[in-house]
Each structure stands twice: as structure tokens, then as C-alpha cells.
Image 1 (cartoon, helix red, strand yellow):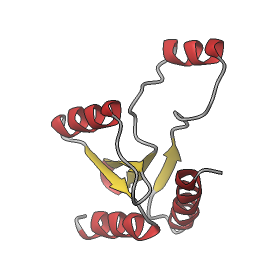
Image 2 (cartoon, one colour):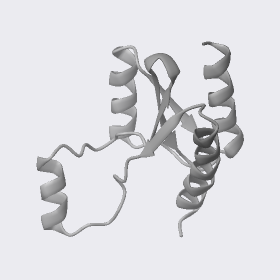
Image 3 (cartoon, helix red, strand yellow):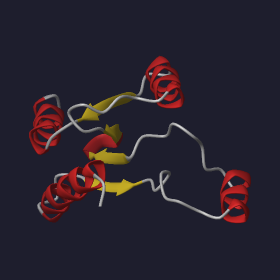
Image 4 (tube, one colour):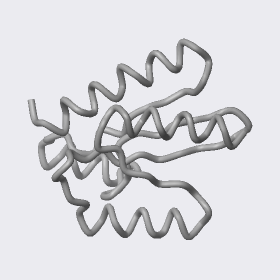
Length: 114
């Protein structure tokens, strides 16, 4: 398993706990999975987009945060940077999580700002 996959699994374990506490809902976007050319073409036709962040967090009162998962040394691809810039330009929040502490901080910040 790749280091980034291990990190995302750990983040999702924490998010699952927060979800059971009623603090948020979440889902992941499996953009990075390996697929056949036919499967990839089908997914592209049906809306899969390069650069979409890895996790979407849904908070009370309609607030949404998109999270890109990166290892401490990981770098954003051009499509990820473009997606983040465009989403931020539309008023959405796109953040990067490089650790479990980052996810905890995002959740805490969203609860404080409510």
C-alpha cells in the first residue's frame, strides 16, 4: 500500500469516528485507482474529473470542505492545483491534509467557526 493510501486510511478512521459523533459526514473520491482504458473512458464520460480532492467533508449548516491528501513530502499535480484555485475562486474551501492532526485541526476549526 502506498504511503498516501495509508495516510488516507488513517484520516478516514478518524473521520468515521467524528461521523458517529454527529460532527460531520464524509466521503472519498477514488480518482487515483488504476483502471482499464475502457473503465477510465466510461468514468470520464460520466463525470470523473482529474484534480478533484480526495475527501469531501460535510458539516452542519451546509458547510463543505474538500481535502486533498498528501504525504509530508507529497506535491500537488497541476490538475489538483487548478481544481483548488477554481473551487476557491467560487468561494469553496479546499485544504490539504498531510497528517491526522491536520484533519483534527480542520474539524476543530469548522466547529469553532460555526
